[in-house]
Length: 246
Image (cartoon, rainbow, N blue to C red; front, side):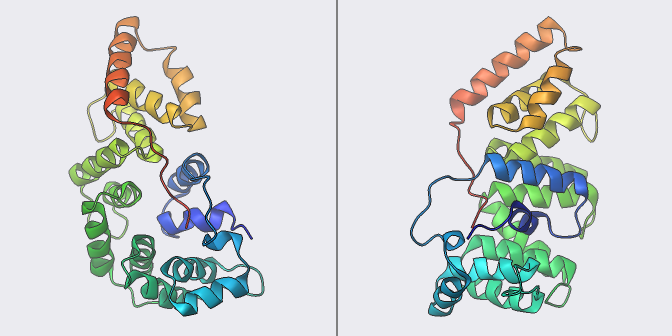
């Protein structure tokens, strides 16, 4: 049984984030999903098996069951954010970071739990400090847009950079757009080209398309400098595939 991309990626943006950011998450989930599956992978099991393993204490199954209840999955698991929060909390208490991230998102929106932006922010900050690029991207976006937190451009940009350094193609793409348009940072075609190139290398198709457009306006000198930056970055950052799926 495979969950749809919508259900999976929604955990990382929650319902309050804009459609543009959601689209980037969807694209990143497609290109950054691990293809290795284990026998304990919940997405390959039946609802009955998932519930059994969740009740037995498997954190990954508890988290996965939480996502099913969060967004609904057929008549067998109708949408129930209270049950979603229950299972997220079970997995989160075992240190399962994805469940902690999802639970934090629920606190921001007040779905299934009393709304508590401070608690949601505290959870996100803790995970971001631990280096999870997905959380850094999500929290960075919140700071940039002022979603559930006081807008903080400086912190938002810094978190986007950290996520980009961790091979999050969504963050790389967001940075490229900021540099290309001079939004929240000084306009810089070289850095825009750099991050588009890296995101493209990571498989983000929209980055490949934007790179083609930028090639029409960037100077040869700028492109040469950007290419050097990309080459140096790639040497120091071996490609990784972020585990965005449960």
